[in-house]
Image 1 (cartoon, rainbow, N blue to C red):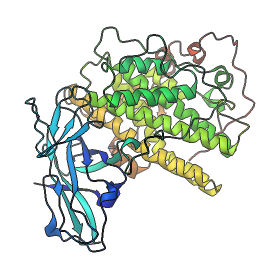
Image 2: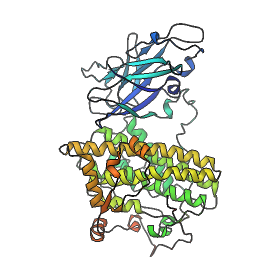
Image 3: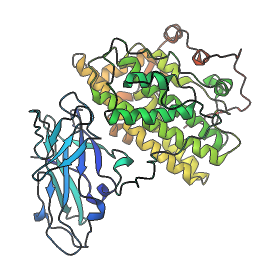
Image 4: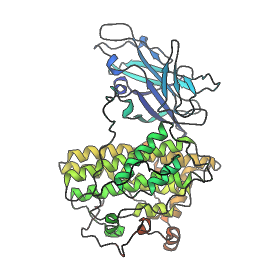
Length: 509
């Protein structure tokens, strides 16, 4: 039995549930969930290291009795999805009985013993042995888990709390759970989060509603609400296998002020102030929210074999992008109150790429998530350094959060691109990716590259070194079709977008 170190034990005291993503040297992904049943307030430590001999496996860790240390430190690890239909187990209810503890799937109420993985229904899921032991190199208690079968040299790619619902100590019942900063923009919300007539009942319906939501604040609020409904099993279904799944819009609508300030990407040439930089970054994140919902709504119905884990990854991505947008618009408001989001020039080149790749899930994953988002990994450190040089520590902190999340987004792109390659006959993912870029991108994919974070996300240099797109003008225009940002706005009375009064220029990295 092989074990993988995942974290110092004290780092797991912030929350009671964590999601883990592992990747083998063969490129296989595996998602697990960790439950910690003892509360942080019950875990009081003395300064003596726990001897390695005190390790107990199979989930229950019981150190020797001593002053300042309690017995019950229960950690369990199991598959992150229910074996019934693959539903997300992150919001499973925990029920404790005299002789066992079970996790109950929120979707169909299947219960699984946290130690054995067995269910009274006859189903079973895989559980993984856990060890907590002191590392003699630094006298720090660390948590190790049994590695999955079917792969070698597993590594931890991501360890993240499920949500603030499972913070330890938990939020006070009278206090709302605040997951991200409020959105600050120049428009007011005039619609309810849940429509009063014909409210969405499936994830696909929520995705299309959010895509058709022009107000950015409402888009973020609806994203939070829809993801929470999905995670807690309060939707009828994902809905991607339904013949009546609603089609997504060709272009998500934008508000009039946004359209008036939309310019050709070639005219967006330089960042001349912190406020302009924050505004430009927020614009990218608003499009990123839509991209996460669009990949589900556009390709879910045409790929009925997509498992629930795909939708779990991309709803998490949508929620992350809404968090990023909120962080950036909040910083914009604090930095320049007179220029709220929507008042400066922006571009829609991300959605242009979405339009070009709207015919193929494989192309979408390659161009949006493994080219555009991977490029973000390259440029974010430079952006963070600019904020640091300007003395804007709050924006530095926001961008560090954003960058860490973006690594996981590229990881998701790589995970599902390689999954698709395997489903399509075990075709080579590197060669297939390079061919997608050749046909769906123009010009060189230029460095310098953030080799470390790209590798963490699954992108070895073989993916991106000496990579060039060969899409010609005619092919690009044909793929774009009638791409026009203005077509996404209902009741649009504008003739031509007003030329922006502020020139935005991007510095070369």
